[in-house]
Amino acid sequence: MTDSCKVLMIFPLFNSGSFWNYKEACDLTGARYPAAPLGLITVAALLPKNWDVRLVNRNTEELTEEDFAWADMVMTGGMLPQRNDALHLIDKCRTSGKPVVVGGPDVTSSPDIYKAAHFQVLGEAEEIMVNFISAWRNGATGGVFVAPMGKTDVTKSPLPRFDLLKMDQYLHVGIQFSRGCPFSCEFCDIIELYGRVPRAKTTGQVMAELDALYALGYRGHVDFVDDNLIGNKKALRKFLPDLKRWQDEKRFPFEFSTEASINLADDAELLRDLAESNFFAVFVGIESPDTDTLIMTQKKQNTRRSLQQSIETIHGAGIFVNAGFIVGFDSEKGSVAPGMIACIEDTAIPVCMVGLLYALPTTQLTRRLLAEGRLFSDDGQTQSGDQCTAGLNFETNRPRRDVLDDYRAVLRTIYEPTAYFGRVRRLGRMLKRKRAHRMIKGDLRSFVRLLFRIHRAGPGTAGQFWRMLVDCALHNPKALPYVVMTSALYLHLGPFARQVVAEIDQEIVKIDQGHWQMPSLQQTPVEEHAQLA
Image 1 (spheres, helix red, strand yellow):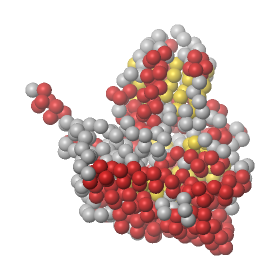
Image 2 (cartoon, one colour):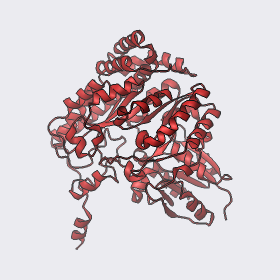
Image 3 (cartoon, helix red, strand yellow):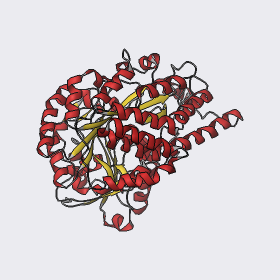
Image 4 (tube, rainbow, N blue to C red):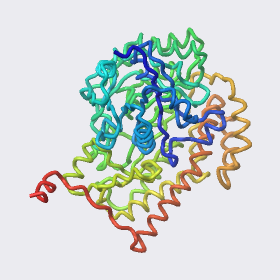
């Protein structure tokens, strides 16, 4: 029986060409990556107390041979854009004879791709890690441990090992209130991985996590990583007064962001409670301004409403919106670019993650495309990007060239400096912050760095930035820290959009010259059986 163990937790590299890495914005603050690896430090808390744990985040620091030699076991895994590096790490472990355990959403969705790992932990770890630990202690050299989807009792989730993090490496630290989402969007894998019944932690659990961060000296931005914070409104309503009270007692050490569905705008009381608890930003999946598309993809919560009015309501509560949009749905009729651009401009959302539709492994969309014989065998993940460049892993309804042309038109337009800072300026006038931003160590230095670097984001950027900044200072000074924050992101977003447009240009040239060939299509099980017969 093994009573002690040295566990090396390795968070794999994200693909470099990603919308989400915000490299230049991180550099302003001295951070190395936007978000800390919450999943791994939660798993670390599930391990026996007498096991030694060392965390290496490959996005922020070097993995040394000394780290590797120290370990009795390696634990790794993560999301789809981390797959390439996770597989590299598994190969390294195999080559050196080091036992490797892999888990996380990508291995749960595509376990066959990770079959080289000695151990797989599939699904939510809370209730199955005990089985893995028992097997390891009894000498097992391999195994697959599977949790039932969406059934884990999150009230049993432990306090994450925040002490393993090097806090100054990150723009923000994450905590989680709930898992799951009540909606059933066709293209989303959240309901497949975590279920349609959102399960919430107790107030005591979340407060203990905030207390732990506070005791470690952390101050500033905390992200609630929930896939839909308002998925369980009843639990959230019960929690927010305690959160507000905690913030009051501690003199508001944290500012919060999260993700929520657009129907947040329908609940004035909930919006007020979020604002009073010091939530300042929310990511909303808008996907498309086209009602037919929203209905077809089962995103009906976005219909029967004015998107512009909904976003204005959220901004009016003092919370600014970042949004997701997708190009490439089957229901698109003709060009979708003008409507999407108009929607983004009308809603004055500066930061828009516009992606190409990607069929994730475990979604309703993937099952439908497979049944229709339209899903590519190559999932596009050998590329070093995300859904901005590795999307459309299927045969599109519209001509592929038209979809790509729409996509580049949207990106080229919305991330042009005049358009982007025009939206930031309008946001600066609308954002009714109830509470002034609390200056933390490094804020002033980051702002000075931004002033010196803003011109690097492309011609015309500096002039637009200064016009916006003066406008906000004159009309709504409380919003200044947030328009500065949004401006800092443009250091990444402006050049990144131009880089993606250049890549799409190349793909369109290939199509025009007849050099692009559609990849082979995945066969349905019925077709495979027929071929074998």
